Length: 293
Image (cartoon, rainbow, N blue to C red; front, side, top):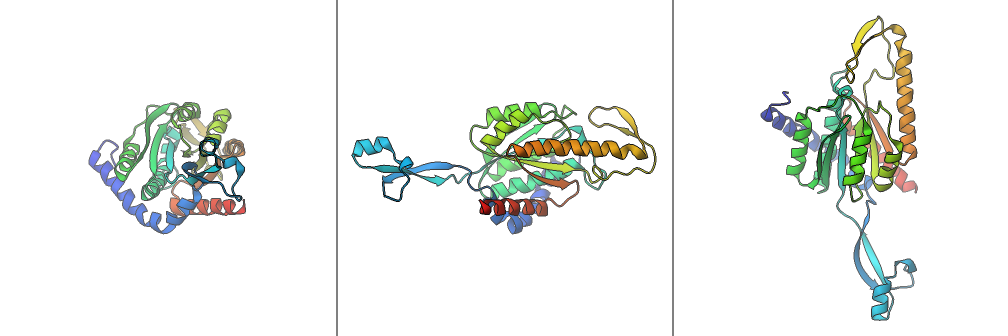
């Protein structure tokens, strides 16, 4: 697909909708809503106090005015706000299998976005590299979601490297209400933990870790020249280079461990994976964890 061909982009978005529609209906319909429950409370009404009520819920202004105790009641906020923060740095555009990490990330975005549309939730999009490349605030409706996916499919970022700090800083500024924040990246660069902790306190922060199948178990039979997609530097890999790949893997895991210690949830998928079973397993794990609380 040409990234500048509007018809091809529109056809790809429609194809993604068709491909994911059945999956959303059969696998995610129930678990999606259960996974993201407890997204906040909104005021409903006041009513007279009963002995079973928590005294901390008493509305003292109404109580004083009516000379009788009244309590505030709340209902769970029905509308969810989801923001997809997608890393489109150069490392995401490559892969050793039939699908790049970027393509896998796009399919993940499509499934989550169409699940949100089905539940009448708002969807926002932030694209970043070493800078914030594009942002559209959360909006409700199929048309808005399709527009965001079209932009994601055709977008050609200016930056090549990964830097999380500008994206995190902007998210802390623009997200005024609690949201489900899904950060989609290969997580190969250092994370600004202080800002991540702020986002995790304010939002339901989820890290979607997209990996290449060879990034962990790398074995090279002969010396090979390679180019770093983010820096453009050319280097050489030898059969002994697996040690360097193992160190890179350990660095990423240490970063993600520190991130989850801040309250960030996490799931992993390899480039080329069917994202629906991965999401379904993740959703079920969250629901089980909620049930044990």
